[in-house]
Amino acid sequence: MIAVLIAENDAMTRALIELYIAQRENYQVAASICCHELTPELLQEHPVQLALMNTDGMEGIGWLRQDCPGVKII
Image 1 (spheres, helix red, strand yellow):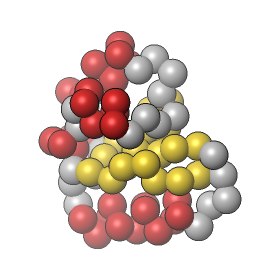
Image 2 (cartoon, helix red, strand yellow):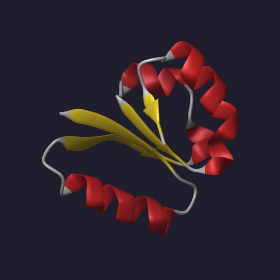
Image 3 (cartoon, helix red, strand yellow):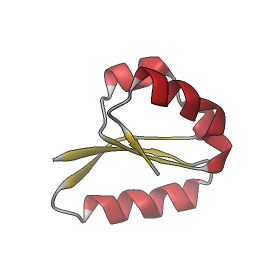
């Protein structure tokens, strides 16, 4: 099972992505947040293998790549 983080500011878009991921057999939503809520502590509580990120979360991508090199980022 691949744990997915959804980081999207728009609530409707985030809900649609959650619904889509929930319908996939091999994926589960580990966390669904607004981009500004992305923190290292959140990823410690909810480890993920895949992060789907809005471009508003660009500042978090740097530390995400450094601190969690195994996480794939889209």
